[in-house]
Structure formats: C-alpha cells, structure tokens
Length: 211
Image 1: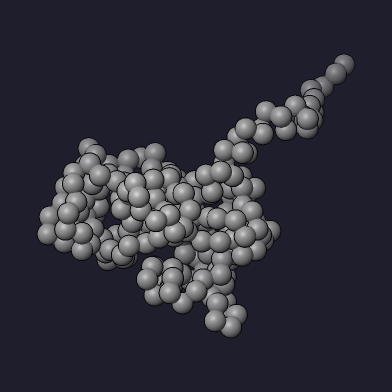
Image 2: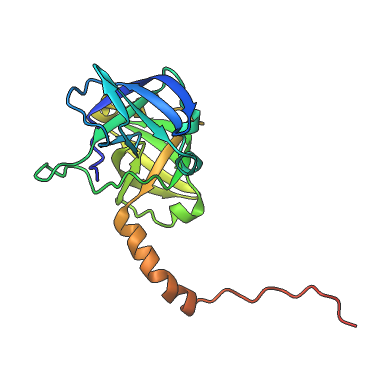
C-alpha cells in the first residue's frame, strides 16, 4: 500500500528480457532495501529482485505490461518512486494500491496563473470512477481531479509537484499510468448488480431472415 507522495525520481539504466519478464534496473538513492519488498514505480507496484549501491532491479510480467506503460520504458526514462507505507507513517496523500487500471493519454497542457493544467484522456470505464475534486493516482502521484472532461479528466498541478516528480515532463501525447480511487472502485463493483437489475440492457436486435 502507498500514499501517492513521491519520495524521489529514479532513472532506468538498463532494460532486459528474461524468464521473469521485462527486467528493469533503476538508479535510486535507497540504501536499505530488502529483496522482495514493494516499490511503486510510476504507480505500479513492483517487487525488488536485486539491489546494490544506488540501484535496484524489478520485473514486469505480461499481465502488468498489458495495463501499464512499462513496455515504453527504456534506458534514460525517469520514473517516480515510492516505497511501501509503514504502519505509523503519515498518510499525506490517499490510499494507493499500486494496481494500475489503465494508460491515459495527455491531450493538452496549459497554464492558468500559477497552476499547470493537464488534460488526460482515459477509457470510459475508468472515467466513470472519477469524481470532481476526488482523488486519482497518475504515474504514482496522488492528485485531485480538477475537472471532469468528455473522455477524461483535468489535473491542476502546483509548482512543487512539477519540480519533485516527472509530471513536469508531460506534453501532449505522453502516456501515463492511472489508478482510480480504491473506494470508487469498490462502490462501483458493489452497485453493479443493482444497476444491471434496475437498468437492464436492451435485448439484442434479431437480424435473421424470416420467411
């Protein structure tokens, strides 16, 4: 479990393929890692396989690659890093599982006063889970939904976030990892049977020929 508060920005210095999946070696300042611990890398919970002075490695299997942008990462890619929450830590963001729901696409980046506005397109199934001024995780960062847009959402980023994460690198076309708020997902799942019963789908049209 994570909070969406980024500890540092790491850099991928090697990408390889093995029986473990797509293996990533990431440069980071962590000096007390343990094999098997979890680190959110751009919001995707990955397991530390090996580590050394100023680096650690992790691997992404096919199912992870299917719903993330990890397949795009290469040597030199910068990534947001957060180690797992410890009991007693301050919960400054919101509850983040590190389970990426989808990849969103940045469609627009504008400036409004001291705020940087980022518009992100997301699939309709994920857009339904967004709540105005609710929480969303974007590349591991706990953010507030500034506005609900047709086909997506808008984020309002402060200067601190731009300086301490990779979000300042965003440009139209950037692929970003999205995790919807866990509470919204649970409520949606619990209501699904009720909504199906209350608003059943119309019967499929019969296009067969009748003689």
